[in-house]
Length: 374
Image (tube, rainbow, N blue to C red; front, side, top):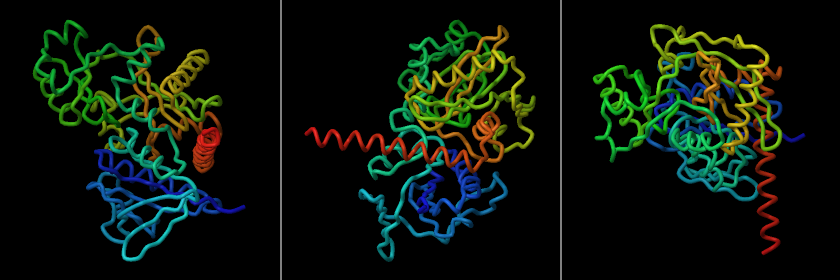
């Protein structure tokens, strides 16, 4: 059986650039090289594309997530990419050369990556790719749009207010406290990995939190603080056949107060990860079914991690969804899915790639039928 030509794309222009590099390193190490011919494309912080021939050695400080970066040598600059029906991608550098690609794993987090932009780029290249499509990625990235859709589906989430740069002057401690109480969480509408999120308890911390959130996005959410447990569930599959992973619990250390970016990636003791979460079988089932309902409501396919709160009344409250979850050594998506299904890390990657190829075949067949009708 012929090997599958797999390209991993990592990096990107977002503040989650470094996390993406570590995720890519782990995926490349886990992929079965008996099944795949591996290629690595990286997007530098300036937005330029690079093709690393020696993908085993593309990182500086590969064992230290605090200082990881792309190597400044050993790559071919990619000036232009195009694809034909055979999945050929042309790299223009000193010489013209073609890569034959069958599928892409875009392990890129945050803006310009997880928000539909990279997915749209890959659609233009007519290449299958892992993870939700353009629409699902873009709506899931925007916390306000996500809440609007899940609210309509009857899914409970924290109360919130939305502000843009144009309405920023309307934010006052009195109005926020009247609507949401204190404390509150202030979040950029479009960001991941808890980037730009702060907890506000008074006028000064609210002002500082708003400043920080607006430094990341032009639209922000201010949410009521839910007192309770933080739980997460992975989802795997395409329309009609979904698997929910084990339910896990995040217990942030008292030093961080909540599951911040530092707690997730920079501090090894930033949080305790409980897999499985100590829940009754009925509550676990409720979380898994709700995770799948949210996945479908937001039109997702492939994979996503869904985050919840479990409040003092034992109510499950939706927090947010992550459509390209991390694949670092401590990332919850693979841990939860493997714990529930018994899949190995490598087999989970195989499933994600298979789902990507099947979706592309399904969509391509539909386009062919339309052409025949026309």
